[in-house]
Structure formats: structure tokens, C-alpha cells
Length: 116
Length: 116
Image (cartoon, rainbow over all chains, first blue to last red; front, side, top):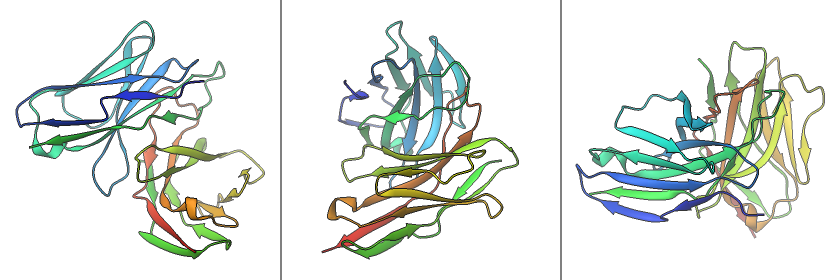
């Protein structure tokens, strides 16, 4: 049973560029959340996708956008990169249970983005 | 607003001994979930244990147990019989109980070092 996978593992970009990160959820999961983890900090919630729509968003600017595909995989896009966007980007997936009660999220290994 | 506080930036424990990692939380919602994740140097967040706010018993998962004191708003993680492989960052997190949005709020983390 494959867990959450993310690509690429590492990425180096320069300021002003655009980047796309990819995530495939754990088998049986239909929702994907993205988190940004700066060095020495806990992860910060960016947004979540369910049924190909953004369902909730954290305190991140519009430069951060995403997409979910019919196979539940997801992309995170960041435009006009800033030095402060350097971080580990984590993808998490879960299956929203019928009861609606919160369910455990499972994380991927992350993509480490460096902006020079 | 919900908040998680982890006041121990770093902890040391001798191999085979038990260790407690502290976590306090703040929320005005009566329904919520509490999680502990382990993050090795590789970066992946590994789910350890979950406690629901209405659960009467403290959660246990193998060598991990959650000391849930609702009145004090604390959710400490206890690791029994520490192993060298337990050396990692540990994050406490919370979410609304009916968490359709998928947002997890994380603390700053505690770095645990297990000494041989």
C-alpha cells in the first residue's frame, strides 16, 4: 500500500520564478492538504483540496495556488518566488469519513524548496 | 483562535528510559482532536497517536501514550523504553473535531535526543 508521495524531492529556484510541486495521496484517500514548514518551525497550513475544489485556506497570499485532479493527486503552484518561500513543503492526505469527524492525516516526505 | 504550545525546544533521555514531551493547547471549541507526529531528519511527518476531546480514556499506541488532562488543556506525549531510533523532532497538533477543512495547527516542536 503506497503512502503519500511527493515530487520532486529537492528544488532550487531563483527569486521571481514560478514552481510547481506534486503530490499523490495515499491509496483510498480523497483529500489533500499542503503545508509549509520553515526551518526550525512547525508546519503551517496552506490549503486543502477535496472534490477538485479548494475547501479551506490558511493565511497565505494568492501567489500560492493549487489544483486537484480527478485521480485525487494535487499540485501546489507558487508564483513570483521570494527568498522567504524557502521551506519544506509537505503534502498530507486523508479520507473524509462519512461521519465528518476528523480523521488522521498522513504526510509525504516533502519537497525542499530553496529560493536563491 | 486555536493554538498549540510546546515549551521544550530540546530534550535528552537515556536509552530504555521513559520521557514526557509537553504540549498545551488553547481553544474555545468543545470538540477537537489532538495529534502527535514524529519528524526524523528525513523530513517526513509520521503519525504517532490521536486523542479526541470526548475520549474518556487516554490514548495508547505501543510505546506511546497520551496523557490527556482536559481541564488543564494539556496533551503530553509519553514515550516508554526509549530507543535510539526515537531521536527526532516531535510535534503536537490539533484540529477541529468536525474537520472538513483539514487544517492542522502545529506547535513549534521538541527535539528529542536519545543517548546510548
